[in-house]
Image 1 (tube, helix red, strand yellow):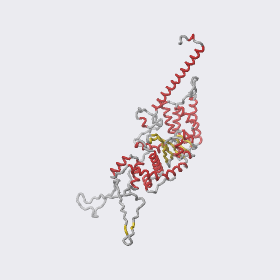
Image 2 (cartoon, rainbow, N blue to C red):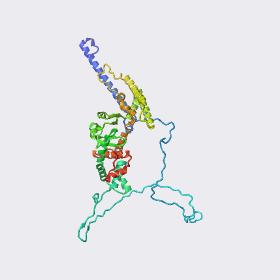
Image 3 (cartoon, rainbow, N blue to C red):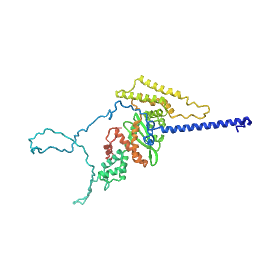
Image 4 (tube, helix red, strand yellow):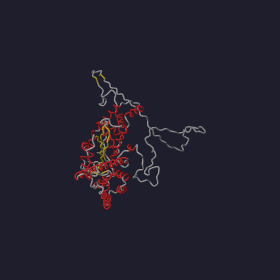
Length: 482
């Protein structure tokens, strides 16, 4: 065909050139797609728990490599933490039993030492702390009706309202089983084995479930008051995590601060779940979140978790080797350390000159590199499509556009550096799923969320958990300070 080009007409030659150009464009597109696919695969292989949100369980089959560590090593490493305080067992004044170890006869002459003539030259005490074995206690109520011998009237015994069945479990047992299952979190089988071997009591799984139903119903009023209290707070942390419920992916959302925790189960992750939770859509103050776009739709002040930024910056340093990422990471860590030192000195803010320097330095680091990388985004003449931005370029733009959300922890010392409080509140959800594998029903997932909301709230307010759980079954519910 190409040998006889001189015989073709002008029109045929133009058509041939157009076809060649179209095929060249297709080949270039395919080449770009293959490059992007290989780059995406390389990114996935290089992500780990230190530079992304991946959990440690995803790295079981990966080769361990040296990773960038943000923590500084000690100059003189020791086998204990420098901040650890050493404490010995203190003497207990509540003594249940006293055993007297006094010699009665002399070892040498066998004289009686307790006749009052001998002298005590030393007296010391030593204590042993132990527990008695848990025991089953059975109380038998004998109810008798008596007929009067004078008027033949039958007098019936006054039976308490709670004594309704021939045999039933009572408050202390219900409180203890609920404490063990929902706070210490063994499985039902383990809990049954414990009662069988230690207390010598066979208890069924149905009974354990019924105790949880009573707990769930009695905490309804607590949950309503908790939602109202969270709406009035000045600062909240928000996050979410996925769980498997009846073989389907569902979500558990958390809204919390240093005094309260509220967990909420929903099938979805986005707007419908947040509106049914009824907190963030009525909240108007400060909220720390991860970079999830749905939160931007609401009217509170948004602050971003900088630990997530540190992970992403670490990823950019390890995989792309960008200088701006290292500069910005050191910039964040230096000013965080300086803020922590000022807080220890009871200072509540930076000086105005330092704050201005912080924002100027932030803009200098990012705008300089953004200008340089803007050349990459220019399309070539043969390109008709929009160029896909790399992961690091999206991070660079986010840090530049959301300057106030990133640096507000330096402007206001009451705003924390990260969203770790919400992460810690969600940690027990993962612990429960690791024990049980998944939740079998949506109903039980809602029970668990309400139980954990109550336990976590009471723990944050330094209220003992076991007495609080006992109060649920004794119709005198112990509530936190709202």
